[in-house]
Amino acid sequence: MKKSYKSKLLLSAALLAVSFPAMAEDNLDMSQDADASVQTEEVVVLSPMEQDIVVLQKEWARIKYQLSDKERQLSAIHSLEEKAAKISAKYPKKAEPIIWEGIILSTDAGIVKGLSALGKVKDARKLFEKALEINPKALDGSAYTSLGSLYYQVPGWPIGFGDDEKAEGYLKKALTINPEGIDPNYFYGDFLAQDGREKEARVYLERALEAADRPSRPLADAGRRQEIKAALAKL
Image 1 (spheres, rainbow, N blue to C red):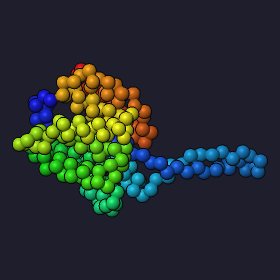
Image 2: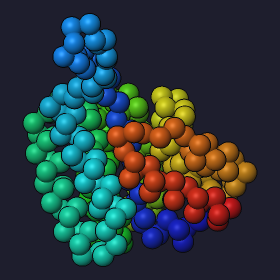
Image 3: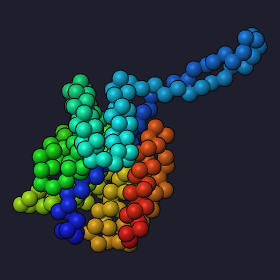
Image 4: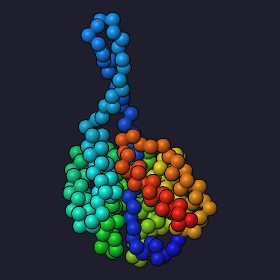
């Protein structure tokens, strides 16, 4: 691992796919004629918690990929942190809101950079660890992806808690749960690239680039693919 890279404390949050399995079908009468055929339309039914998470996802993507001014980013992410904390408190036994609270804290640290960001990074780590205790498979193993990304991007002792061995272990666990996902493949590929393992890195980065779109997260996917292309270009 290149120490100069790690010292920058660029804390990319893990942009994690949310599975919403609850689906419903409505039979719609498309005509006043009694003999008219009835067509079926799929409707995604979200629980209140899932609706809250969608709000966090969309605002997170807007802040990360559409706001270029640092002050505006910080103002927006601080507001989102407050909202995420309230949602986590509303569902204390659910891993998904806790993961997103951690992602948002990590993103804040990535905007701030430097030693002053370490406090929020440590708080994010605790949240991801808590989420793993509740449900390690939540959000397709996103807590593993997020922890892995922190461990390889945070400086090691005595400054921070960075640890390449732990990073690789967490990222590999994420891939066992979501082997074709855009985020676990991107972060593992980026880790390998920073560790000087370019040939292996290309495999995972290309797999991330070819990952299926997440229909509910077009902005996040577009932003992530730009990051993947930039990482591949460096190789």
